[in-house]
Length: 351
Image 1 (cartoon, one colour):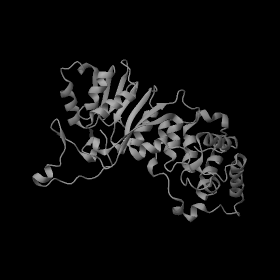
Image 2: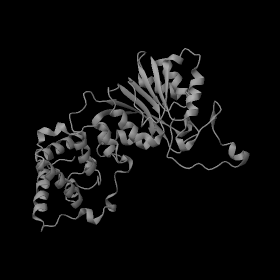
Image 3: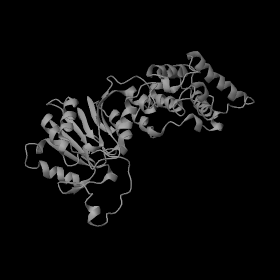
Image 4: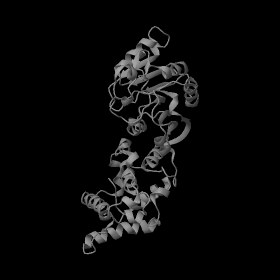
């Protein structure tokens, strides 16, 4: 099931209001829970085809609803594990497939997909509630063992952020972090009229293939750098790292690591859980340059000798890599990787 933003539903008034309710199998769908059922059978077939399912695949489906997509998945793969939050939908799934050849190949887990432990699966095919897009994406990318691919329906703007490239308007921290961990491609644009009831926005189907092997980078360090760079993605990197707040955080890390005598070679002892990349709500990470706070852009007082010394150390790193006048919105994966390496070599860390 796909959905838009959570909103409070208005109580129905009389028969006229009741006529706008949407049902399938006698079950009423709730927009506030992201319950928008994909009704176009040709679109369902296209998603199955593009997923490249093998007859030996264990398939994870998230938010199966009344089972329209589930049936096609059972026909294509070995088995399906369906995670569904709504107990009404769970009962409908069990009723629909009870006594069929598919009953022993379908396992239904009732619960919140963000909170439950996911079992082994080869491929994920899902039409999800849009409000869980970001945390679910990173939960999947953090899942072990690594799955082959995921084909997921997202709100179109979120999907375009996932695939955005340097220089694109929607290029953001979400783009950089997901593309570090996976190859992502846009498969289909899906109009809102393909759903019952129709959501307010169009959707897109995206294919996510985790990189194997996973990149050899400390993810907390990586996200710490990227998070700073994308707080004001259209400012120069030099201006961002001159901010008092940024310098204060980095200097605190620097002094702490010095005190603990943590060298660059001990970086692998830090936590590398990729789930941290989903924190913070990526869709709201950037703000326009004109909204920047003046206080954020003030350099550290020259009278603070220690602060000035550390500031010069930071700016020296940027100068070494020629990043002072570059902007995060135009930097590629390799640029961020190089910049992180230069900072680490200078003893400056982000976690």
